[in-house]
Amino acid sequence: MRAILRGGGGSGPEADALAIVAAGLRAADARPGVAAALAGGALRAGRRRVRLSGRRRVCVVAYGKAAAAMAEAADAAAPVSDGIVVVPAGSPAPALDRSRYDVVRSSHPLPTRRSVAAARAVQRRVSSLRKGDFALFLVSGGGSAMLAAPDGVSLGEKARTTELLIASGATIREINLVRRRLSAIKGGGLVAGMECDGAALVASDVRGDDPSDVSSGCTVARSAGPADAIAVLKRHRIHSRVPRAALAALRARRPPRRARRMPHVIVASNAACVSAMRSAARSLGYAVRTADSYGDVDGAARRIASALPARRASCVVFGGEPTVRVRGGGRGGRNQELVARLLMRCRARGTVAASIGTDGIDGNTRAAGALAGPGIATAREIAGFLASSDSNALFARRRGLVMTGHTGANVQDIGVLLKTR
Image (cartoon, rainbow, N blue to C red):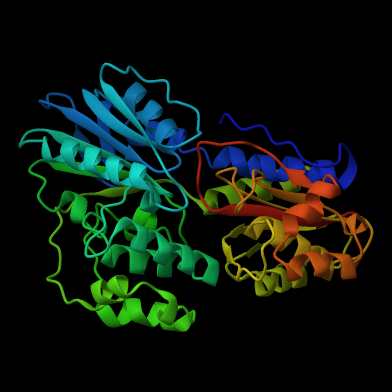
């Protein structure tokens, strides 16, 4: 894990909170899981064991925010002949032999022309595989935007639809449901005509760890009907603002895709991060409860705060991904807003809240999240920043931001609410 956590405070409860979150971030690293799944040059998927030696070609196809780290681990563990690795623009380059690997930089969180070029490069690589070869897909969150193959819409229309969904507070599952219907490669489209065997190792960034929802399931055949996609737009009140071509494409009836079936192995998850944080908190002497941060951000804050025990030296560790409805033109992200809302509810001295995105990026900011106690601002001041979706300004001015840079991981968000008094 390349990331180094840097946050406010150097001692006491803030230092403990940072140590607990750091333990969770280390557990987000997909490399150990990839190495374990490929130990001995054979892929292990439950009770199934697939030998990779003797194959004419073992090709890595990696995409998502953890693509570089996962590809490095696979290259060290398996007899890989060649590969293509799609990584976010601005992230560190993978340490791979460029004579065997093509490294493509792409865009996130909205698709751009880079995303279209990346998708085409991946499609070409997959279509070059023949019977007797083996495709090793390394999948992590972020691939939905990084691989774009618009179907029935222009790139701009697809990007606008995605932008509206993100700002509306839609869940990642709802966003992916819509994106699958606007894509030629998602929902199993990438492997629909693949001639060889394959498998996917998945770093999950979705609740429930369903591979069909990670990067919109390019390797998993799953399609929703037109009514399901339209219902998402109506539920979040953006139906009238979505481009007409996107609405037409979503309504169109299409035959179900028949993607080649292959095993999918989860190699990193949010649950593993929460478990690591729980162990770290106990080692520091805290009584620990767990919670999740799914759903509306204010509801998540209320749920986490209510789980905090009354006794001293206690904490709640949590993981998930809250949804935020953008209300103003400020800067922020779901983790910074969640910390602000936790501080609104927990005003006692000795209380500290921290939450970060395991990818190191929170919303439209350079921060991974925030770490602070209620003394950072009054409740009225915090409410003012939240009213304009400007949580980043609150924590930037009071030295409450947590900075990691690109982590090479992406398994949703993690955090802790603790008190010492």
